[in-house]
Image: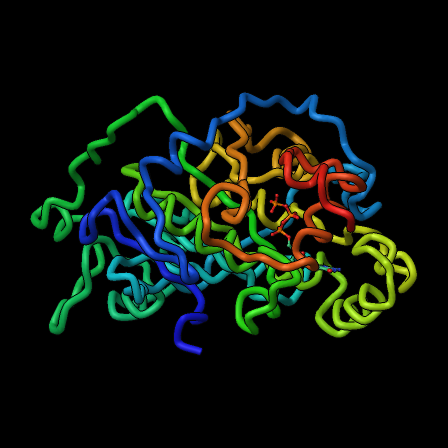
Length: 330
Ligand SMILES: Nc1nc2c(ncn2[C@@H]2O[C@H](COP(=O)(O)OP(=O)(O)OP(=O)(O)O)[C@@H](O)[C@H]2O)c(=O)[nH]1
């Protein structure tokens, strides 16, 4: 099973920029970037009527979010990212922000807490620079000495950072499922952000099964094997086609100091919903996520994943086209 291990990510500084490996495929970063046109968007993208009714009725304000801990994670691909764990006022779930690059910081994490020691701050990740044995202060003075406060050098200062709003998928990310391309999308987002000078953010939402949970998603899989598509299966189980809500993600992005973003997605509902009730976030560009199997010899190939993608296009208005689909008898 070694070739199926999830998440292969690269660090821009430590690995060659042109070639990387992900879920069994060797790909060329430059050519992928070229074949991935960005699309200017506005909030006028039509809603597809798939979202949770709660999400459709636009909320008036964002939920409270707080980053409670942040830690550096060296990745199996040789790079590193900073994992931010959030609590929020909407649910009891531990939503995550996977941050690439060291210039993006959480406002709530950096806040000074009452009677907090410097050691407390470092333990919860509210430090700048790098932790090392014997370090005894978290604050800016030391970072200045270390050069951490120098402005970052960007290749393209105009562009907003890449952002992916990802919903949990145990089957696709951990259990090697070829019913969907969720794991591949997570890897792809991480690869692109690792190779971007500006870094990026994956907001990892604990909304398993488009918000219906793992147990219900597994029932939906059985209904799919009995002939339903992914939308019909949800409806037969008395769930909306998509039960997700993105308010927490919007609030997390705002906490991470973001306003203008480039969003990696094909989902029109996500583009509209992530902007928040008061346009807290502006999606400057939508960057398409084209399945690898449609572009290269790699990627996930199965009848199930093609059906899954076709249903997204046909019934959920996903902005994804391929000549392959027209020829599939699904
Ligand atoms: N209910 C249900 N959920 C599924 C199924 N297959 C995958 N999922 C869930 O769908 C979600 C994946 O959505 P995302 O990766 O955010 O993608 P998306 O909203 O479809 O759009 P993109 O941003 O374009 O990828 C995860 O929560 C998966 O667990 C399925 O057959 N039924």
